[in-house]
Image 1: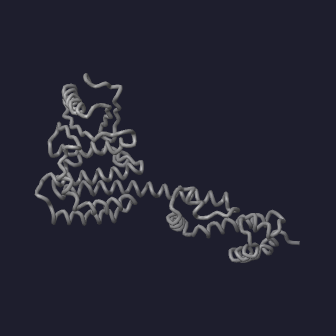
Image 2: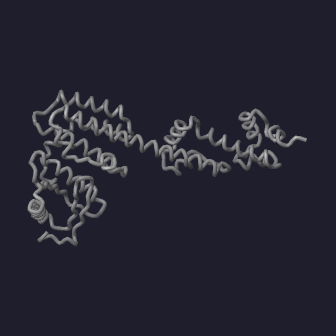
Image 3: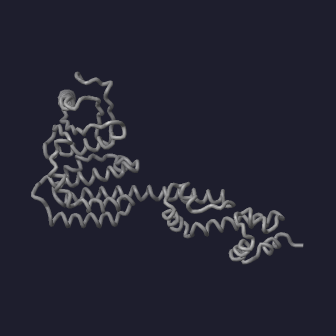
Length: 316
């Protein structure tokens, strides 16, 4: 580019969008965008639309600036291809039209976030019924609403370090929205979108849950002799204690305390079988300081007292 100092720019690609971070005066950006369009048109005969964000100060604001530019860019549907659109110039009326559907969006996305495909589709069907009853006359409303939904979900996925390209490698927001001119179009495109995203999240959650429960088992087997709690385990796997407790129950059919007790009794059985250590010492070694309580637990789980169990291996 003739007028752009490339040492002050950074280019990166997100899905099918190219993002250029430029250190320049605000008024200069528009002329630079026009020059970019002209050169691309001249070199490869492609029409290019450009969305411009507000100023960003520091890396922490770059993510928001990126989404501002994509929000501006989606308005090419109303201005046509080859548009240069600044977020500060976007007509707020289109956004205001979506306010009455905002709660519906949030309910769908909340269910998608946890991978609940059935509830997501039910809420989506409810939204379509509401849309049919309140459809604005503006023909651009349907692609606009679809864009609002997809961009909102992209942000949620980004917060969880999930790029939409991982789920849909060939995803192209604008080609998708070009198919959304009627409610049936909207239903077809977004139903497939919801199906693929929830399927990915379900699979990811299963993997994460299995990994968390495996880590719990490893932790218990390593520290069974200590006074460990569900809170200790929750810090190890970065999950809420209540959620972790439910997850353990769901995956194993047992409570955390039951698993801990089973491991302690198994360790006690090994000591009774292979050593002559006194029962109260074994109780302490497996993390149960009350030897009487230990004997009661042992009998409950094995049908024998610790002494009776040992005698089966050390008969006179």
